[in-house]
Amino acid sequence: MKAVVTVTLKNGVLDPQGRAIESALHGLGFAGVASARAGKIIELELADGTSRETVEAMAKQLLANTVIENFRIDMP
Image 1 (cartoon, one colour):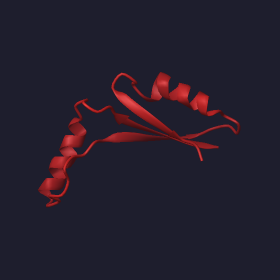
Image 2: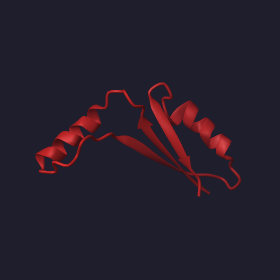
Image 3: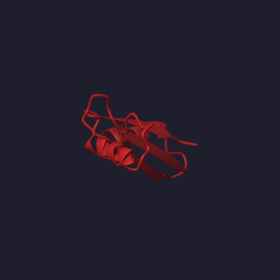
C-alpha cells in the first residue's frame, strides 16, 4: 500500500527556495512566472490496511511542521 504526503509552506510564510526558483526562471527568460513556492513530497510504502488517520498522525508528528506547513495525503 502506498501513500503520498505533499508538504507545502502556509501562505504568508517566507519561502526563500521558491523565490530563488522564481528568480532563476526569470533569468532563463520565463517571464510568465508570477511566483513560485517550493515544498516536498514524501512517498510511504505501508502495510496493507494502514488507515488514513495513521498517516495523518505521521504527518502531524514528524513529516510536517504544522505551525508553518500544510500537508495533503493521497492514498490511491
